[in-house]
Image 1 (cartoon, rainbow, N blue to C red):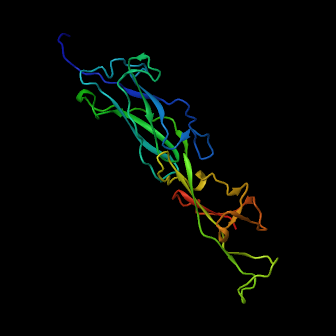
Image 2 (cartoon, helix red, strand yellow):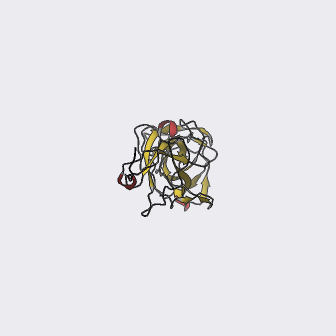
Image 3 (cartoon, rainbow, N blue to C red):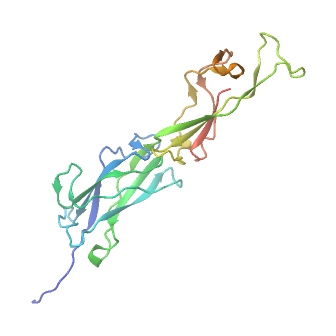
Length: 250
């Protein structure tokens, strides 16, 4: 058989390496990183035998890789997508020459939960010959809140003698409106994390200490109240995936 022709060979798949990823499978799994914080990903182009293809990314118009994000848990909840991109092919995450590899050091995902990542050709077609869809990564996560926002309601006492609207000296009295905090899970940029709920809600509703101020005296004088300062309190709103919950401190 004689003759000649021009043809294109493209990678068989892409492979991802994510340093420090515990690949949690549930809300009980190990923590990976805080929501919105940066983490590195190393991608490599591979042939059908699993070997690296060093020519990838060295084309006249260099080909790239992009990542799509699938939410694994909490299932059916919020997936804001992955932020970040890879540097040019030819260098690993330590700055060493590594043909067929590319590193992105500032990827981030600004939510709570567990995801999977799937690589593919950046423009959707390798030199016009079609796409290359990489194998999905292992689970990535568990991602947790970067911090919490805390706000308080305005509690009110109730008189012990309701009919006369007064309380005797030394007579116990309680709350008409129980003191309550609203905790909101926040990402690194301060945005609300909607996935912080149900089994991903980790705040246990306990207090180590608390005190009350006498606002009638300018808010600086301590007010002694015969209530417990620790222990489990009532917690509401932790299972509806809106990123907030209300520990009742009464």
